[in-house]
Image 1 (spheres, rainbow, N blue to C red):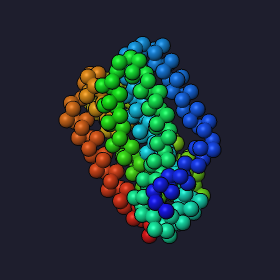
Image 2 (tube, rainbow, N blue to C red):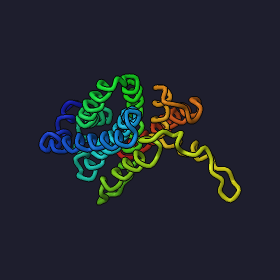
Image 3 (spheres, helix red, strand yellow):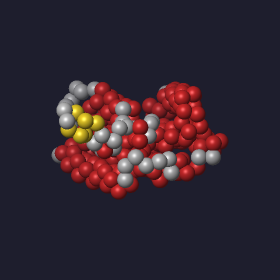
Image 4 (tube, rainbow, N blue to C red):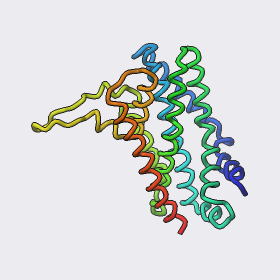
Amino acid sequence: MSFKGVAYLTSRWIIRQPTWLFQSVMFMLGFIVIMYAWGGVEGLRNLIIAWLIMGGWSTGINLIAQEIGWSRVGRTLHMYIASSITPFSYILGSFISSMMFLGVELVVVGFMAYMLGFFTELLVGLLLSIPLIFISMLLGIAIVMKLREGVNVSAITNPIANIFSILPPVLYPAKLVPSQVVVLGIAIPLRKIALLVPTATAAELARQLAGLGVSESLTYVATVFATWIIISIVIALYAIKWGHE
């Protein structure tokens, strides 16, 4: 069985329950209405980037990693390990099956970008979402491989996916975060700290490349993002090795 077989097996729950995709579309349409009501066309311009970043992060940690986590809990992962399937093929198959959700979201975001003429935002958002999927997937795998049996995987991955998407400056520009705050006489670089979050730094990098303003230097943002890529690789290599012992 190759990665195609894994993709087929891990996509059955989506095919049999397509209402999950319908729910995703309705959620997006609701956000579009809210952002337009609050921020007009400029709000939608930021939403294009934000949604691609949020979609990439959620795909990696809330779909791919969650699928692997439930396979581990349900012991079907042992079946794959005992077969000729390599870890790469298994992860690739899980990745392909999860693309159905991101594909549906891309149709909605792509249509909105086409209607508004925001092609640059669509392009940079899509380009930055790809490495973010990689980061969130590896970090997610590292987490689920360390969970003890009996733990609800969704109870771990869902909050991580949502918190990292809603709280940091993803749906809103980082320039709205105060540059620094003074606590007990100590100046804290709040904006720089906020941009340490992988989703926030990816969104800020995309906004700068799309010409939506600069909150911190491009060097700082790019360095933080590159650091997250390195960290995720190191952590995942250790976790995947541990999980296959």
